Length: 66
Image 1 (tube, helix red, strand yellow):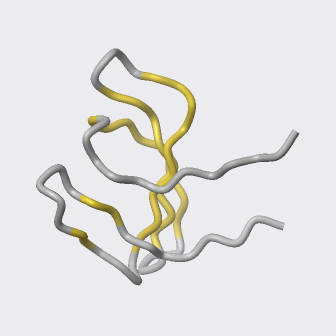
Image 2 (cartoon, rainbow, N blue to C red):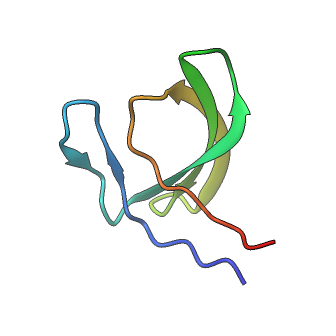
């Protein structure tokens, strides 16, 4: 039961982009002290990929209950 809604993302300047097209979720794994990995859900091409990017982007976070 994990439903992903295409919320888009927030750029470092505070503007939002690609709502309805993408959903990006941060991973808990860092690339280095300025970057981390994330999952990219692309609703246009129906693909899911993993990438890394700078932490100043506002991506979604999935919280799990222990």
